[in-house]
Image (cartoon, rainbow over all chains, first blue to last red; front, side):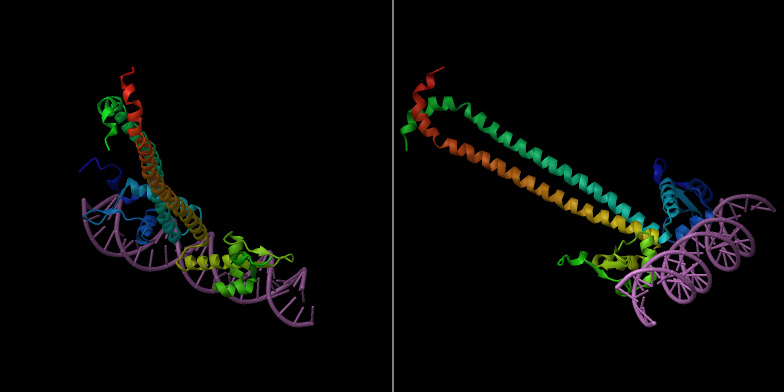
Length: 135
Length: 135
DNA sequence: GTGACCTTAACGACGCGTAATTGTGG
DNA sequence: GCCACAATTACGCGTCGTTAAGGTCA
């Protein structure tokens, strides 16, 4: 079950606390407040993933800026919404560009289609020229 | 200078506090923390607009949810970003739709252009039919 | 001169982080 | 049996809101 990268929960609380630069007890508080949700071993010990560590560091940054934990939680939620929205916006703009390119291409293709038909027209004139009187 | 609607700063601090449901002194704290920025009269008194009142109510909601003032400030900023981004996303999607409609129309117009030219082609055959042998 | 505004300071309540205590699992 | 983890409790510090005191303008 290896190779899961940053999702793999490997750090015990003491190591996670050291990596995040906080007291282990603080991590337990964060969990109680719903700010992190580390995995648990069968015995009940917490295991923190790299993602958890990143989140802990983000929490640290925000609390250092003076936010309390309720604020940290909301801010993290809002930031997630923001990145999601930015992605959607990028995609929407790419689709606009694609639609515009497709518009140009479609016209070009249409022209080309007629031009391709126009080539044999000279022959068509030879073929149908006499029948032109036909109603 | 009337008719400015919600931007017009009309409420003194006691009324604003009552409208927002907080202590007047609390409003002064909010201002010191940069959460609101009411207008001032020549004499130095604060004057709150309807927009200010809305903002005060929003601050109240967030603090009631347990955020401290630093968190309230950040959350309000992020929410502003979110609404801005949502607007941009709506616009981008509208532009995509417009570009796609324009793509369809452009092809249609191109077709129509050829069809208009194709009508006289029968006459052209009559006119040029004999010349078809010309190299 | 009274009243509402201004500012600054003091008080009480609460949230957060740390440390101490006790229990439990590897 | 030892060490690290778990959970609960207690303490210190800072923030927030209220209240109080003193000054200024209408």
